[in-house]
Length: 584
Image (cartoon, rainbow, N blue to C red; front, side, top):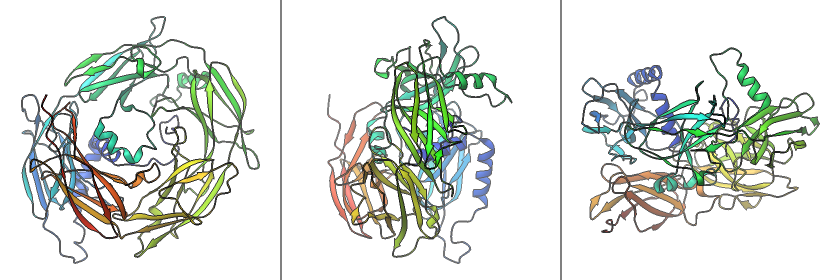
C-alpha cells in the first residue's frame, strides 16, 4: 500500500527500485522535447576522466535496425536507449537516439559497460535487446572498443482495451478511473523478492485511463496477455479548467460507487479476464452500481493540541495503487471529514512533513472497517510514537556525499508499508520521528556505487537481519548505521548443454533470507554471451538461482540452486546450468 495525494503525487519521496527506473526512463522517452535535450547533452558530454588526465578506455559503437515483428517493415522514429544495468545510485551515463526512415540507428562513443538496452515507439510494445515475444531480453555487455552492428529489434504491435462504464440506469459514469492489472510472472516475482515487504497485492497496475463524458475509456500500449480491469470512482480534476466544479462536488460528497472489476463484480477472484493479442482492440464494458456510502469524521491531535493543516488519507487495505485515495486536510481545530466511502477495509493515516525537509514522520494510522454506517469522533494522535536519532559512518574510505543517503523503515505486515523516513545530513546525522508500534525492515537508499550497509545497530542489537520491533510504550533509541566500500563481486555464466543462455534471470539472495534482509538480494540478467555480474554485495552467504523461459508462454526452467560465501572484497565466479525442458 502506497499513500498518494489526490494529485497522484506521493506524500513521501518515491523510492526508485530496479525495473521502476526503466519504466521512468520509458516515460521520459515518450516526451520528444526531453528526448532531444537528452541526446544533445550526451553528445556534448565527454566520458569520465577526459579532463583529469586519466587514460580513457576506447569507446564502443552500437548499430542496428528496428522493424515490425509481423513483416519486418522498418520503423522510423523509434527510440533506442542504453542505460547502465546496475541500479546503484550515482551519476549514470545513458545513450539514446532515434531511427531513420530505414529503421536504422547508430550509437557512437558509448562507454564500455553492461547495459539494459531497449527500443520504444508509440503503438508498439517496448522491446528489449534479444527479447523473444514478451520476454524481458538480455543485457548488452560492451568491452573497450567493441563495435556491435547487428542489433535487430522486432517490435510487436501493442493492444488496446476499450469500453464504456455505465450504472444501473444505463447512464454513463464520467471520470471514473479504469485500470488494467495483471498477475506478474514467476520471473517478476523473483525479481521483486527484495520488495516482498513492500508489494502487498498479487496484481500489478499496468496502465489506466479515465472515462470521458460518454463514459468511454481507452487503455492502449498493452502487451499481449490477460488483464483484470478495475473501475474505481476517483474523480480527477480537469487541469484545463480553472475551476472544476465537478471535482469540488465530488470531493465534498465523496463516492457514489464502490470499485468493481470487469464486468461488474466486487472481487478480482470473480472477475472475467480480458485477453489481448498483438494489435487487438478488445471491448470490455463495465457496470457500476450506486451503493450506500459512509462518512468518516474525527480529529487529529498533536503533542500540544489540535493539529491543523495536516493531510488525512484513507486507502484500501491490501490493494496496490488502487486509484482510490481519499483525503482531507484538518482545519484550525484539527477536524477532518471524508465523505462517500464505500464499504470495505481501510487504513486511515496521517503524515506530517519534517520541518527540516529531511523526510516524513508517520503521524499515526488506524485500521477501519466501513459497512455503510457513518464513523464519527475518530481520534488520530499525531506525533505519537518513538524517535530514532542516528548517524551514518563509513568503514574505510569516506563516501563523498553522505547527504544523498536516505533511511527508511518499512513495516513487514500487510498494512504498514511505511513507518518513517529521514534524509541524512552532510555530517552523517539523521532522525526518524514518530515511529508507530510495529515490525520494521530497515532500508538504506542512495549509497554510492559498490557501497553496502555493513551494520545497523540499536544499542547492542544488530538490526540488518532481524529488523526493528517497536512495542507499545517503546522509547526509541539511537541508530548507528555503518556503510562500507569493501563490497564483494560475483560473476558467472548460465548455460544449457554447454550453450550460453541469453536473458536468463539470476537471483542472488541472502541465505537464510528474511523479510528484514531481503533488501540485500539482487536480480540480474545474462548478457549476449550468457554471462552475469553482481556488484556491491555485502559479505555473507548467498543462494543463487537462474531462471529462463525457453519460449513465450512456456514453462519457467530453473537451475539447481548454489550456495556461495563471500568475504569483503571477494571476487568469485560461479556457473549455473539450466535443464532442458521436459518432453511432453
